[in-house]
Amino acid sequence: MNVLKRYLQSFLFFELLKGLSVTGRHLFARKITVQYPEERAPQSPRFRGLHALRRYPNGEERCIACKLCEAVCPALAITIESEERADGTRRTTRYDIDLFKCVYCGFCEESCPVDSIVETRFYEFHFENRGEHIITKPELLAVGDKFEKQIAADRAADARYR
Image 1 (cartoon, rainbow, N blue to C red):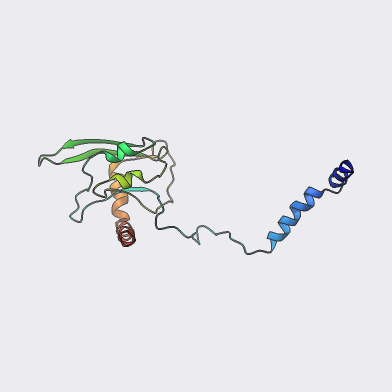
Image 2: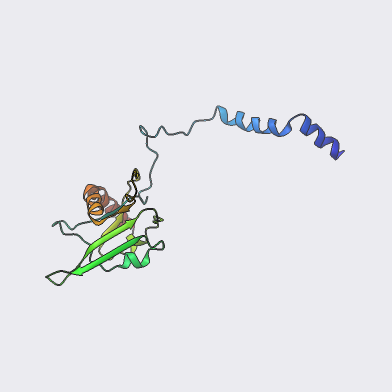
């Protein structure tokens, strides 16, 4: 009996009909496709995208070269070199992030005592040439300057929920 049942199922294309029934059920359902350049999918306020270095309102960079972000990075994607300035403070001379290695975990952001390194909500970045995946300190500062209003608004909203 079992052999006969399997023979009929294979002869009548039972699996094919089951698959077509699933397709038929979803054929007239509401579409969830987003037409990307014109429409945007909803984004969480805690989304982690491109990194940025922030500045104080007086224009001085926030990073004090404590190297906590470099130490906590699980992918070893951050490289920091620092030197002491004439006024006795330490500042970074080199701050590089390898975006191919980065896993966008947010540990660097959480470990920073002065809220210097942040991950913006910007995700539309790409690389065309070799070596562009390593983002340097001037590029990080430029991203921070560009998105400072959004970063500050996200920080203020996040502080309300804590």
